[in-house]
Amino acid sequence: MRRAMTDRSAIDLNCDLGEDASEEGARREAAVLEFVSSINVACGMHAGDAHVMRGIMQAAVARGIAIGAHPSFADREHFGRRELPVTSEQAYELVTYQLGAAEAIARAAGARLNHVKPHGALYNMAARDAALAGAIARAVRDFDSGLVLYGLSGSALIAAAEANGLTSAAEVFADRTYRADGSLTSRSRADALITDEELAVAQVLAMVADGKVRSVDGSVVEVRPDTVCIHGDQPRAPAFAARLRRSLESKGVKVRPILRA
Image 1: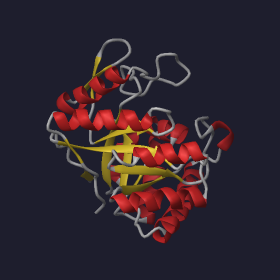
Image 2 (image 1 turned 60 degrees about the horizontal axis):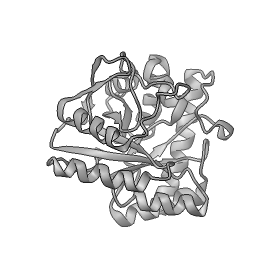
Image 3 (image 1 turned 90 degrees about the vertical axis):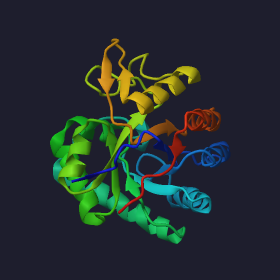
Image 4 (image 1 turned 135 degrees about the vertical axis):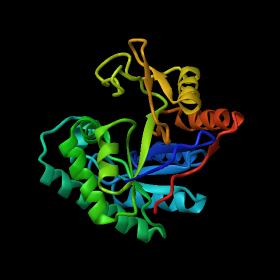
């Protein structure tokens, strides 16, 4: 069992990218790269394509940013956020297929995959479903056991990563609210997202400093903050990433990636 050791003086700041092929989206994603330490690149199933993947990976290589695969359900219509029935075998093959594509593009861009972070519904289902989490972890292990597997702090995916001998990175979220059980509030609810940047920054600083976050019902939830996720599909993503990084560094927290074995 391996895990990224939580060091309160350092944090990985990650962002989901390669999800917007428009000119405006490309500019926004490139701007975000200036402030994060790792990125999770869409593998073409919920968003992106080979051209978009190669472009964002090349830009990341030029900045020394760790590159990860962001596999999802094959569901572009719903941006990979719709929960779908899937067997363990299907999940294993789905993830393996996308890792192969991501690794090939990474090599073409002069890089090597560093980590894997499932996207959307696949991520949330694996957080609570041990069988699905196990299938994903085995796919990562069999593809490349040196890869770091990102998962929601305290989730089944973190447990599966460690059970399969992978380095795990427990993830917390800057702009999402939490339920009392440590899961993320469903996007179907009005209070799922934190739109006030000041509140989002305060939530991250509290999680990094104390390992705790306040849930929507007011209870305190313990978290393991190895890596913080921000989302690159918001118009103010670059500005927020910059503000969050400045805030972390002002508290003496270094922003750095969690590197593969």
